[in-house]
Length: 255
Image 1 (tube, helix red, strand yellow):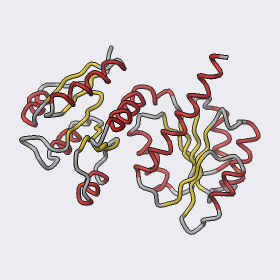
Image 2 (cartoon, rainbow, N blue to C red):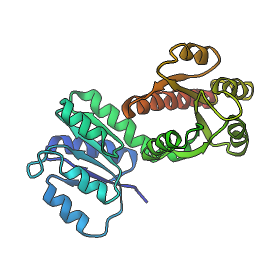
Image 3 (cartoon, rainbow, N blue to C red):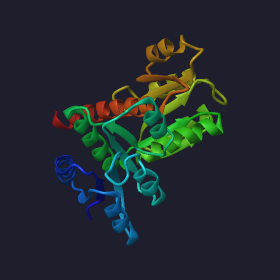
Image 4 (cartoon, helix red, strand yellow):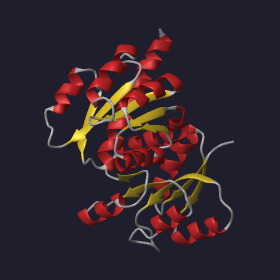
């Protein structure tokens, strides 16, 4: 059965563009041009898998539709034509999948990537390795919004065991400071068994340790994030790396 996408958009031309993209991916699409129509749709029992939300609607000009949709537990991508500092901060404080500014055609290519990912990310296992429960939970929550299958452990030894048990893991996100071994030691152990074209490793360390990025990259990490990082940067890094790995896998299948 097709996943249902709710497109909340008052511009008919933009709504049709989003609908065409979504249908090409296999979504079943419902369009709501106003907040009032949204309320009517959700007054009934719904099974929407995902929503794209126009930030400013004729009857909800200041993003009022966003918390309403989120209260109905529908994962949401925000589409906005404005991105002043106040709006930017407001969006980042919401548990949304992402936001996209309607600047040019590239914005819709980015939306297509997200729509595709929400359908397929569940096939990708991500292992989060961090000795801090709060930090680990934060990263896991970000990944779950993007529909990844998420595993988490607090130390390097457990991470190695988890990789043996869960063959669907394609990404490891590891902190430097771990229980039992350092993140760098974990990286070296993983790369001894899993080459760079089979498993993505993204290292994370505090901003004071600026030298860490080079050490991780030289030892086989695909990418590096300094803490604290914003969700936007995190998602961009994860998306780029998983798409790179998927491209490599496609080339293998062709050959």
